[in-house]
Image (cartoon, rainbow, N blue to C red; front, side, top):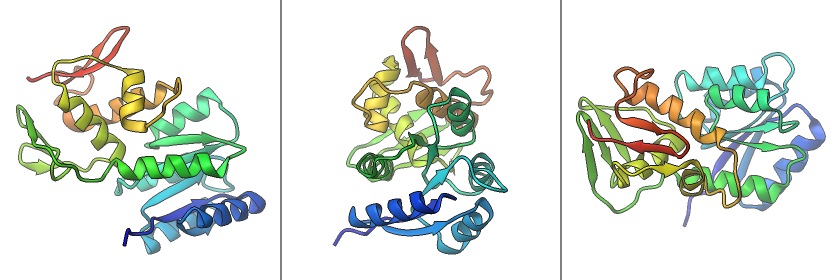
Length: 227
């Protein structure tokens, strides 16, 4: 029997929180909720959920700070809920370590699809390993090591690196990566890709500001180059 995903929903609006809890439960998820950032952090430490759905505008500690604190020690997936498709909210959220975002008012089916997509990113697959200097991407075990040490990557960072490693030296557009990694079939938000690449470079590059592995292809996207 497939394992039921365990979600933590951090949302201060009681009507939204209750509605999403019921809707996600009907979609087959187990859901625990919190109404504040402080309580959300407590529930995260106690419950160890598979994924967090996190509202940006929270009383006290806001969603950005909650995301930053979690990211210091945990790579579990985080999906942000934003009140509007605001550039600043989206960029700050992604830079804080979020994997994806959904704009309110939230359609439960859309949120469920995003949740299932991000959870699939960490699933194992049958394949082999690719070596890029001291960086090894093992697609069978879904493990990445650098200098023999396993890297702590979020499922989204891992899937992005896996997809780039399948095609070394080949430029992939941002839209291709959105389809392959985020499973966004529409003309999606390329900021998801750029923010994830930035975080990934900080973990795999010797000098993240002067990358030698994950290269930017101007006007196209990114490619993974052997050293």
